Length: 120
Image (cartoon, rainbow, N blue to C red; front, side, top):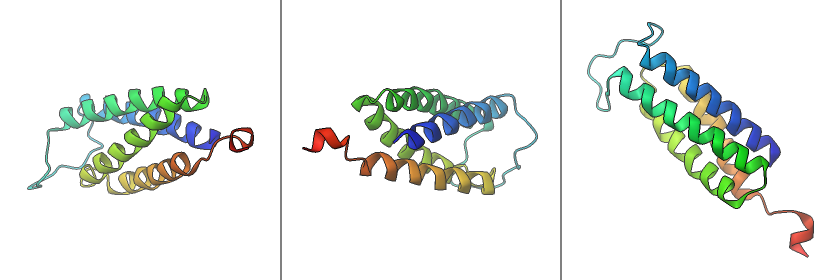
């Protein structure tokens, strides 16, 4: 569970940095022609920035063993999977890495059964 919390924190910080970079209009991102889910880069920046801040909050909650942290973490990692899929055209490899980490986070948070004392 702690590993999922740390991953949630790391992914959150990386999303914040990615969001700041996109809001600044960094030239790292690919130029996109016709794309069904195209937002401008500033909009994607704000989306990633918001997801990042909320993910850091959820990661902190999971570290504190709060139920709201686990629930929020599951939802945010799920939303991050969708956002990363839609962002695939800008940074394909990075988006796939984030999707894989988010899938692991969701699996770890959903499959956590609690402490052995609570199962007695």
